[in-house]
Every structure is written in structure tokens, then in C-alpha cells.
Amino acid sequence: MSSLKVREGEAAFNVPGAGKPCKTWYKVYGTLPHPHNTPLVVLHGGPGSTHEYLDILSELTRLFDVPVILYDQLGNGRSTHLPEKNGDVDFWTVQLFVDEMHNLLNHLNIHDNYNVLGQSWGGMLASEFATRQPKGLGKLVIADSPASMALWVKAANELRKELPQELQDALNKHEAADTTTDPEYIAATNEFYKRHLCRLDPMPQSLVDGLAWMEKDPTVYSTM
Figure 1 (cartoon, rainbow, N blue to C red):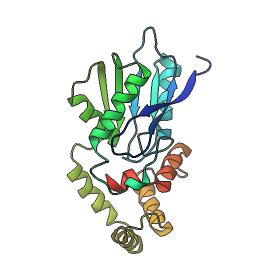
Figure 2 (cartoon, rainbow, N blue to C red; figure 1 turned 30 degrees about the vertical axis):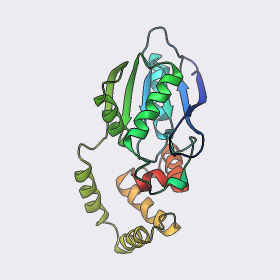
Figure 3 (tube, one colour; figure 1 turned 90 degrees about the vertical axis):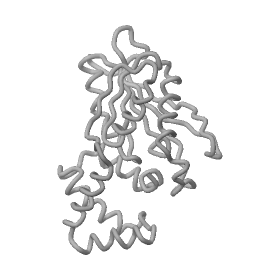
């Protein structure tokens, strides 16, 4: 394939309790419907990140003509933001994002035949989605996802203790004060990311873009 067919769109998403109309932004690589190949729906990590760092999966379209669907989950990226729901654990639930998946599948009219790949938090969401035995799900790929959140948190806290003391103090101070948008906190967080999220220097722009969205609106990440 010499060039990729790409389109972007928005799916209206009725969310009880949101207090305003919501939409899910998505990007489709390739042709839908496809006469032969099953589309792949990709779920990004976070929760609170965006699709950009997974754009590389468009290579599946270029090399094998597999339609690839990326989207920004509600509250993130180009989808509807709800900063007024920051801290509302009754609103930001796994079920909300499962419902969003079903809504997008129906919007794209692929609910009868699709595969799913979830990365990190996206794999956790994909697992929860698959346990419901949804109609049309063919294959499931879980990439880089923790088997236990308790163990993940324990390991992350141990890695955090390896940071210089002044960075640990900055993280603790702003988390206690709920000022996690402060530049000092963001700088300390970015140092942690450089050590334990991605050690490439500079980081790939696609990853930088996703982190920038999280810094701009950390509602989903900080709540979940």
C-alpha cells in the first residue's frame, strides 16, 4: 500500500450524570467495512492518556490491510472533557468506559466482528470488556498490563523511593495539597517517567503529546 486511507470522526455518547452532551473522538486507518479483514480496535493506557503513542499500529494497515481504529477515551485528548467531575469516583468507573466501547462499536457498525488490543490500562479495560462475552469479539490482545493493581502500586512506590529526595518531597507535598497541576509536581513526575516509563532521550513525540494532554487535564488519571 503506497498510502493509507485515514479518517477521523466523533461518536455521540449519551452519559447519564455528565450534565452535557458527550462525544468520543476516533481515527480509522483503512477501509470500513472491509470485505475480508477484521478491524482492530485499540485501547490506550492511562487511564488518562490518549491514542497518539499507538499510532504506530497503523503499520498493520499499511502492511496487511487490517483496519485499525484508535480513539481517545472520554475525558481525554480530543474527546469530551469533564474537569468538573474530578475526584468523582462514582462517575469515573470501568463500566463507563465499557459502555463507551459498545457505543463506538455500534457507531462504526462493527459490533458483529472486531478484534481488540489494549495497552496498559487499556488491557485492563479490554479484559473487563471481554469477560462480559460481548457479541462480535474475535481476538483479544493484552499488552503491558498489570495482573494485579496492588502489586503494580507497590512496585511503583518502590521505584519512587529511588528518586532524589527533593523530587520525592515535591510529589508528596503536591499530592497532599491536591495541587498536581503545579509545575514543580509535573517536573518531578516527568523525571519519574524518564527513568521508568520511557528512557529514550528525547522521548518520541507521540508519547510527549499524550503526556501533554494528561498535564492539561489530569481529571481521569488523578481520579482513577
